[in-house]
Length: 477
Image 1 (spheres, rainbow, N blue to C red):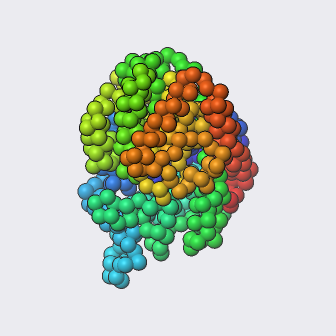
Image 2: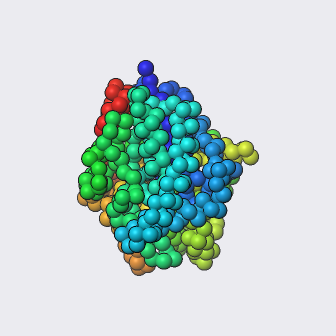
Image 3: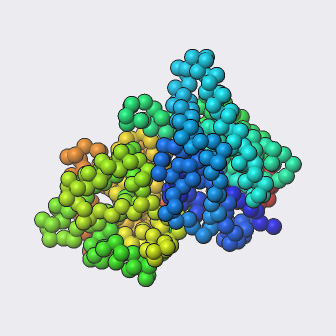
């Protein structure tokens, strides 16, 4: 007997990198015969509690492309509470949670009242959602962070009631936690997340219907200091397999994006969000173009995964940088990479992560991964994706890299300083030329990277989890 799953995601976007990783895990679970074959997965992407993503709040965008495997909820909280008031309350909650230790007693009371009032709305929503879809297990993605405090509290309560007398439960799956999410408001310089959970921030607790999974040992170590007796399991992300070669949809995509087949394609597989450093990838491209032209080489294209609608202020900065450097003909903003390649209502192709990596590999391109701060990425999948596709990677220095990938990984490293970015771009151009010429040393290094990430991101963890959930139905991981 197979199990039925549902998904609730705190990222508030239909193009999250973690959702793409989940798509890989979903495919594995179906291949193993554990998950319902072909069934659409009931999904709530968290638009309604992320007012910091105004283009998607509170019910998503009409131009979103939803993959066939996802059955997206159409529930909207503005049927029950004014959207502007909800956005204001959620923003105040997020800010007060971040500075909870500094709040006087009366402010803590008001915070608790706000959380309670909104949680009641979401508890009714999640309870109805669970009754309608009856999932054996809900995969709750990045719901431990404080963006979702009222929604997470509501999910805990709804799940407690729903799974009290039936098998299954909730798997909380986190790729960020509090200390590791050192994201700062660029306007105020203050932390968006607190450094640790407080009494108003729900964390997974040890009970029959609750599991907790994190993607790295660093996050597990952080979680050990949290006020809970539940110990999370460490299950590495699952990278996709990248087939060789291209087909008709790649050719159609090239035509619609006006990509010359003779030029390399570079991928920047991140959201357009200030800590992700898209502007740094653009700066690298400027040097690559200058150096390539001076040597009579093909100028690369840069394809940026993220949506310009997520962080409007930073998006303007990135677009202004493209204009300032004269790169308008060389950069493509993909508007959010879908979770599966598809055509929209106008017949335009939108390629997923796998197909874009195939395009990069076939064009002798690579990956630019340029976080602008060192202490936010808990893994940083850019290098791993490059290795999965056997293409070169340029990355800025970030703290988790050495912990995750180790000294054997071959790549071009740089700091965020302008002079360092220029030097790294020159080195990276040499790697792209090595791809073009099938340089034996480079090809051996890329093959080594490919083997390495298979060890770093094995499929065993997810396979074991799916089997455990299937066998026990109420296993506490």
